[in-house]
Image (cartoon, rainbow, N blue to C red; front, side, top):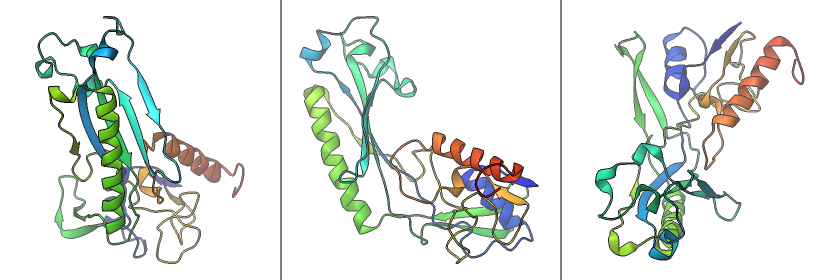
Length: 240
């Protein structure tokens, strides 16, 4: 039994370099949750309540059917930088704000593999074709408006505010290049257990199999799917 777990870029490159029949969906349907990020100095009324030893926090406004995005207020250690603080403002007086927006999963967003041009590992070079649909743009616009409302509610906007949309892949949660599906119809690479269509002993277990829109860190979903794949390989549970 072979399990490929090279991530959303690495796993399809390994399969593209092989002689395996992977079908037309290999590398297609890549997606992520679009990330809007900003940082604010909390308004004065909130700062009066904050102690110097205030614990790290993370407050979530979750994804819902009518709001296909997720908001998070936190102090994100990777963005902490004392040089960005205004005079008299402590680190604990600030908050990072993130909004993660679901995007459409479409075949046109894909990797294109160049088998004549190899990477340092001897695998095909991959270029990405990646863009937003009209629905994506409208969704991102609505999410950006809510992001502004949250920032203006808790933050001192006079101190400066600079929201940004992370570039493609900036969420670090690319998914879908070895998409799972219910049947071998050319729109997926693996079945619901991560097994490569038309092969009994080859599996993919990483973010690349996730094929539906989401608006949050997919780590727990990926781990759950990997456990499902392990159960299938070991003959335990459904599909064993």
